[in-house]
Image 1: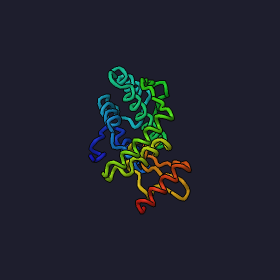
Image 2: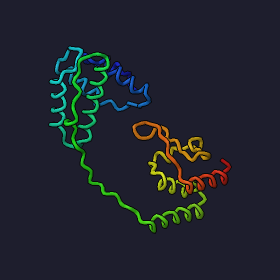
Image 3: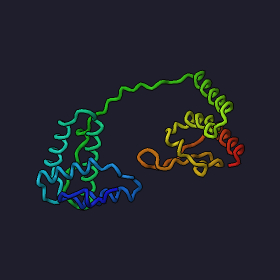
Image 4: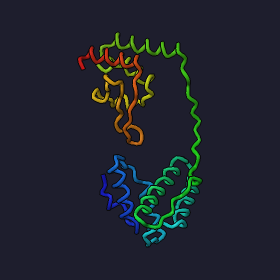
Length: 208
């Protein structure tokens, strides 16, 4: 990972660094910094020497990026969020800064239409998972029926189930702790009684 000081050179460099370090101290990874480094370069290009973030500079940057936008409105939204994060940090330091309002955000259009499985299809899926674990001796398939039911009963993401450890499953209180999930946040997931029994049976079978 590059040293932060080497990535920022504008008049607000120390505040970019301070804001990022604060976010990391709060548990956010903040490894993707392109929205911040590009904005820092823009400030240098504009010869912005003051310790402030005026409205004119912010609007010039966001309008420029919006005009250049050809691929992803989500990328533009990330840039707006980055500027807003910096502005909010500056304001908390007692420095004059313009935090862009929400109308700068581009609405992201999604064409995805979710497929709703019928009860019959879900039952067939469970049955197939059970049969697969019976007919294949590969160790990683032994928990496949449990994983499939976890997806169904909790709505966990693929990576969350993959990274789940037994120490994060409270079989006594029926709660799963997800560590560093979406947006790098921890959260608690309640377990249904039926799913709890499946987990207990599996733990007993594997001597967990």
